[in-house]
Length: 497
Ligand code: ADP
Ligand code: ADP
Ligand code: MG
Image (cartoon, rainbow, N blue to C red; front, side, top):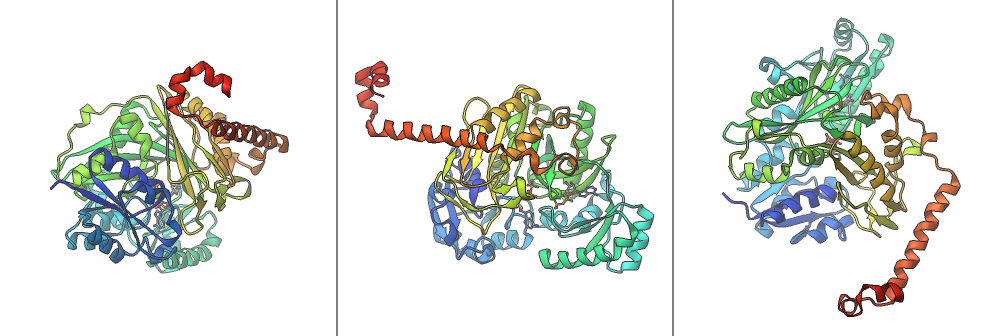
């Protein structure tokens, strides 16, 4: 069945990202929004928009029934959940299907199995996928848990089975801290995820986070679209990602890719999905989890593969077969993404809120900005503090890096602290440049001093922007119109300025 109208059950950059692909496919779009998002960019972009409640997401973006009501009101025949919010909620997917609406994502069964870290380990066990040494069952007895930790060998990680977004994980290096960390892990699992199941796995020291993008259709075809390296993280959450990895050989790439396809096979996966691996110093890899949704960093894969992942998701949801094979896929150049979070890197990456008093995007060759805000808009306190994703593409890694530095130089954001100065620091670091960095990068190399600007430097930047604003205002005063400019020619325009 051809989808005619998609409701996007999300906000910000990802809502707009999905609408762009829908528009290119001639599909109408519906936005939903909370009272905090009345003038949000995703609302302005959509063909229609439905108010679904007060600002807290628990009363708006997370309420399945309100989303279904909005579908009925607008006649939307499909829902795209984006990432976060309801994207990995099996109950939501089930309700959508029961209401006769297409869920643009995998089967309810696959979300259930892969949404739970333990269930997923059990599922992939017999599919030739290496697992992080540890348990594949929940444990609640502290003494028994301690015995398991002893057997695995310290350091270990206590993890919430239902965890996500970098939350619900605790490292234990010294056995004497075990009891306390276990108590904390259980209570955090209960309060954050409503499920107190925890398990223990080996903590891999100085690993790389390497993940593989896969696509499957409803006819049993599964392909991998190569890997993304996502080791630059703060609070176990990614900030800079790239594709392909700077360190994998073609043989290793194939091994990672095929293991990811096996993970997908274990749950008859269809739709877009990501298989996350943790890699040790020898680049031997272990399965961490599978994310059954479009991922934040999907653009780097799109840049190097030429595949529009959202269009593929929509086509797969319509029942179409994937139109290319593994052999058709090739890596074209290199792509990097930096996440622009409204956070203060000088102050432990604490979220910052306020108004984007100046907001000017970078442009030019090989630059892509996926964002959800315009100049003058406010960053609400209620949601994820990500403002934008800045993506560059180059013929090779060196060009992608240089392009990113240039794009960061062009990006003008005033009014809110962002992660951009931090990203600039990373891009210039020798460990990033030679590809040897691990998930410990921030802990090992970064201090707030690295982003603390000399006051004069800041002043210079503000002065330059002020001068530009004046210039812009002057231009506007001259009431320049295209018709007039055609008559007068470009030389006279210069003179009038
Ligand atoms: P990705 O793996 O796509 O990089 P992230 O870990 O950055 O995903 O999470 C994507 C978004 O979803 C973020 O906004 C994050 O805060 C949110 N998120 C993901 N999983 C959860 C979860 N289980 N609970 C709360 N928020 C989550
Ligand atoms: P989430 O669902 O929150 O994304 P993951 O299991 O994917 O949880 O882990 C997130 C990050 O935490 C990883 O990218 C990695 O940096 C770190 N991590 C998780 N498990 C381990 C482990 N066993 N050893 C070392 N680091 C780990
Ligand atoms: Mg993860």
